[in-house]
Length: 360
Image 1 (spheres, helix red, strand yellow):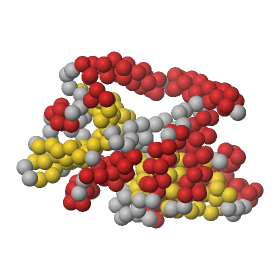
Image 2 (cartoon, helix red, strand yellow; image 1 turned 90 degrees about the vertical axis):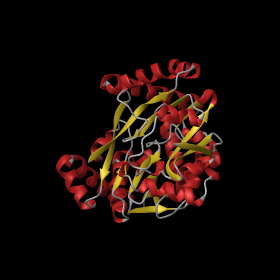
Image 3 (tube, rainbow, N blue to C red; image 1 turned 180 degrees about the vertical axis):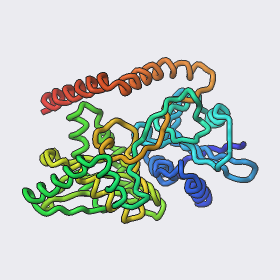
Image 4 (spheres, helix red, strand yellow; image 1 turned 30 degrees about the vertical axis):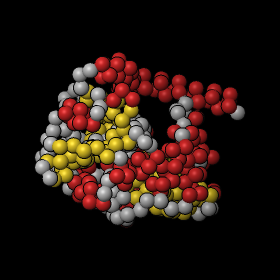
């Protein structure tokens, strides 16, 4: 194995084409977060992004996109934002993960959404489900499954949609729009949600807003940003911004206007989104790792992602272990215990309300 390092913008068209070819050859890699366009766009905004190009003789057999931080700490591209992480490589190509880290100048590589089948994985790493909406049989087949397994949710969502239209006006769904105005409306709802629930507001970082704007403008057969909004009487009610490959739509930023909360606008929107996505060739909507009630109600399957780290022996890896691993294990314990999770969620929402009052 030979490894060369490059900034994303330094990749030539032949390398980008090879990346896309390797990705499309393996269903486990069918996530837009693993597409070359995503890494290149993030690299335009963050100078810590690198790409390791892996060779077997004269042939390119893999790409390993990562961020390199001080002390040789490696993280996935746009760490903390992405629901699929890892390297894109030829099937059957194996490597020593620690040698890869050495070639990349890394002491540690930390991840929390590593996709299945990665040579970076071992039995020590924690596995987590990533729920999906399976549309490979079409939208009608999906709703047939919903009626069978989540019949109450499906019927009540349709009933609330009819009630919303009776009380507020005609419903319209705008799928895959490229208009910036509804995007900013959606991001405003998301910021309010972060603050209301005590979470960190991601869109307080200008580079993340710019990233989303650039991805919205990126459109090709194999990769695009997808913004869709539901309107009632031409007033925006709910929406979502995500990314797609040819056949997978990655859920990313869903939100809604809380004025319409009693109608379950998020569920209304997700059903409308699934219908339009299926009509546009999408076979899977990956809703991402995480315990959310709406995911449980809408899912018809799941993928698997892993959390953990790969490290070389050294002082930097030891310091990283002390700073990060105990925190991660504590978080995992809370997430796995329904009582602890509910208590933590309630505490965050209380904090969010207090913060809103103090900032108001």
